[in-house]
Amino acid sequence: MNRAAKVGIAGTCTALLALGGYGAYNIVHGLTSRATGDVRTKAARSFDPATVSTSPPSDAKAVKLTRAFLDSWSRQRLDTAASDTDTPTTAATALHGYTDGLRATKLTFGHVVSAGPSTVTSGATKVTFDVTAKVAGGTWTYPSAVAVLQSTNGQLAVHWNNSVLYPGLGDDQSLTAGKLPANASTAEVVASDGKTDLTTFPSLRDIAATIRQNTHPSGGTTGTGVAVVDSGGAGVKTLKVFTKGKAPKIKTTIDARLQAVAESAVKDSPLQGKPAGTVALDWRSGRILAIAHTGADGDIAINGIKSPGSTMKIITSAALFDKAGLTPSSPAPCTDSITANSQTFHNDPGVTANSASSLAQAFTVSCNTSFIKDGFHYLVNNGDASALHDEAVGVFGMGSWSIGGGVATTDPSIPADVQDGDQAAQFIGQGKVTATPLFMASVAATVRNTGFKQPIILPGQHQDTAPQQISSRTAGYLQSMMRSVATSGTAAPRLGGLADVGAKTGTAEEGDHTNGWLTAYNSHIAVAALVEGGSSGVNSAGYVVRHLLTEN
Image (cartoon, rainbow, N blue to C red):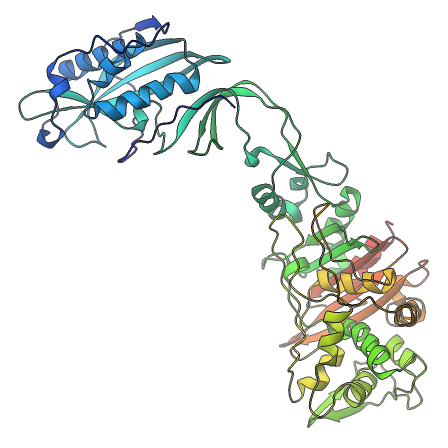
């Protein structure tokens, strides 16, 4: 990067832009040397800023001083020009920095006219002019202005601030010309194909902006022009482009084709416009392939923290296998209702009581009472109901994830110290249990992969690990049970007939309505979807998940 004009100016930076006045005046000189002598001994050099008059100087006097100031500047007599200001030392440093930072070789000042009393600088007359500068890479033209003050004894001075160099130039900002400085705001955030801009997808626009702001781009080519840079040399704003560069790219894990499917799926007509969110993962790597959502309350795919309903039975089953030694054939009687800690629980409509039910059968038809009975019996000991929390953290990696690029996600919650009726409700994904589609997609991915891979959206992003890998025994049990849900259980109306699919539906009560959930996997991806207001998981989220599974 070229050495920028370092202009650290104390005081207020005022943008002075105006056109109009009477007549024109041109000053043209080549900047062939830096003259430091020939300092004029005029009254302006002894201008006292403490004795500024409240009356602005006349138009003629203000224009005359401005012409003298610009003439010295164009001749590279920068110290002389600085002596015409109210802060000569500061102005001299800034003028030298302007020439050095832009590598200016020629300056032309034209249309030097009065614009009358300044509306910004009290007691000053505004004089406007045009600047044409031959700088590194090309010629740059822009309008500028100065405010001319007079003291109580009639002495005049140009009021100095950064905007004399360029309108609106801030304190401790500089100008540079030539190769434009890198600026993360120009980076393009793209899908894994390296070319599809994520901002073309409505659900990813905010995510792309966050990644762009928090990630250092790579590649691209640098254009040339004029730019404002900060005190550290980072690009603030491009003022003039001589030659265009190619924007650097930040590659993500998003699959452009699958993202397009997800964007359409959350708007599928059976959802009737209800807020929906979905996440798809590569279950082998944890890479996020798609994130899509609708609704007015933000991104519910990664931040929609809701009770996950019966999709939590995946983790409950894993805990029963790992901590209680149960198997899919273990007894799990399905009754119409059950009472635990003085709270009565019922099944969803359509679930038939079966006193001879096994755990696998209860999972297939999503019998709440079976899981409350076994969960409360085997996983709550002397009032300690932390087993489900421990399983979620230890095997399924529940925690505070960073998916990359500064993208915020909401953490799921299965409290370790749950009390009273919530001790039973947690086993069916109610009570104080909350999750997001992102987390539930990861739960399905952990089952299919036989191991947890923390979801990420940037390749190479650090992935947290679970304290222990899910056992092949437990994963095998869950895969068999989830396959039954897809082929003959609660998910069959949407997923039946699809090859290699395992699934779990969920319907969670929230206030005066229910939310529909479904999480599933096939041989390529793991998916979860949430539909707020969905009457059941299969009849709401099921449509979303099917779209994604059939495209892989």
